[in-house]
Image (cartoon, rainbow, N blue to C red; front, side, top):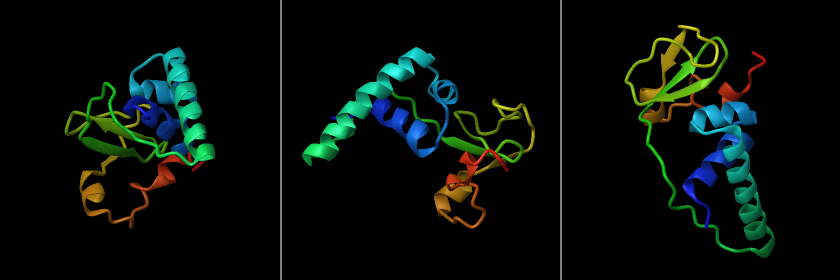
Length: 122
């Protein structure tokens, strides 16, 4: 069984390719706590993969964030409980786009709601 916080650590580090500092900020935990969670998740994931076991994802202490924004300056994706935010928490830019409608429609036209926000070299 993979807890939701373990799943989130894998999602941020391996899927979104954030570094540990960025992922810890996103999860609102310390970097050392993120490292412990991630190591436990990797062992569980590897065991399920090698042994062909079922991997269940459940449990954990989570908070659902309902609004997603894309920073056009640093390409960071920001999740917030607030319906609007003024500045990107990573680069302080005010050039933010709401992705709420984009996610609901799963449009993929703008490429902002896909994995392109992880490419910070743009």
